[in-house]
Image (cartoon, rainbow, N blue to C red; front, side, top):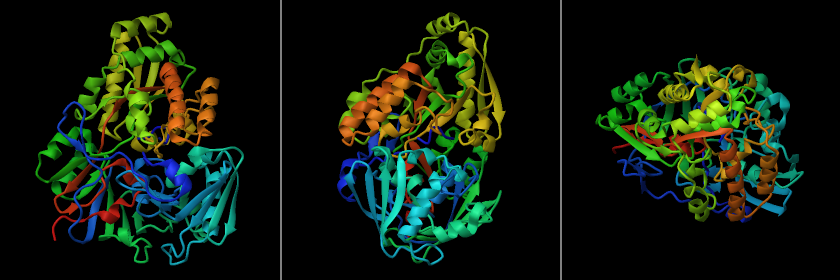
Length: 545
């Protein structure tokens, strides 16, 4: 369930630009807004012992384990434990050294990374600069078809400049490129393994060979994935507390909740919202809420139909009863989204968040005014096709709410239901969007910088699913992406936010915290969305000695 590859690595880029020392993010336990009866904390209680194995539930089977193609929650949840990036995000939203131990920028168009010595791939070979060059260049190769390719749009060359040094030379300054070295674009794989696996890389047949605390043991397509402990892992702080992890795929929300209740699954992220209350009161485990940078949005896929008229987009936004949507879709755990990029994405310069995000007005709810806008646009009775799926219960809930809102204001919102894998394809395959006007997304940042979210609205970007184009927006984005100071860049990003809210290529719906269920026998898991790049399974162990 994705939008414009938009998790927060909530870092301190200014500190990273000079050193690789970790820098703090604002993730202390905090009460939910409005006294909703939950707290947001970055981690669960630490493990008290080791385990032979535990079972983890995914809401869908990963469509790939190829780091260059991984663009959704299921593949990244698995890969977070298997493959690693040049930098690493921690559960408390800090950036620390990963496969790179140092970074310097001798000029605005040159990035130099010093690599960690002695790192072993799962096959026992040692990581070198050649592996890093091959891994990064592969993202740029059109034949790879990577959704991350546009991240490297300003890269002129990736060069080995020492046995453990890699240099990126840019055509123009690009702040986001460096930040994304802590996400999928910065993932490192064995060059020899890539060459050997060829087109089978990342599939059940070809597998992967990375450096993480767990190695891929088996992948039985349609059944499960098993990871095994990597005995030669380089970081003793994250030596796995379990010998193996077994992933199961349960698409049906009720069945997934029953797996938690019965103990056939020890835990899982993104707890079905329809089962939150049942699981919280079951006594079979604990539901915890963590930091999140995601917002549920409606992304416009076709600007040639009715939604090409701004008044229709405004009307649909005004007709949404977001508070009731939150009750039904998020179990009452959430708040209306004020902008496409969630509040949690504004942590790069936290001192700016209050002024640049919190002061935004609540989205308007005015059915009569919305109906008038539809009439003014000459769109009364026109059809808008919204894609829906059983992939997650909240998708259906939001879809029904949008359909009802459309009916109230004179729009004929047709729901097109597709299989979960077809729904995921919408975000990676342009052909899968044919005939669709709207899709419900869960957009999240991979960086601490809200600028990253708005990157995906640039003309021609891979994540710009509706091919929206606005020259004013593009110019403002380029201006922000050359600004090295986080506070000043936040101010420039606020300009992009203003344009996006004015033009509504994405209609904000609601924000909710991240969630995880932990059965009674396990603990130690990070609770927030940082789990998509942090080796979360390594910290899970026995709840009792």
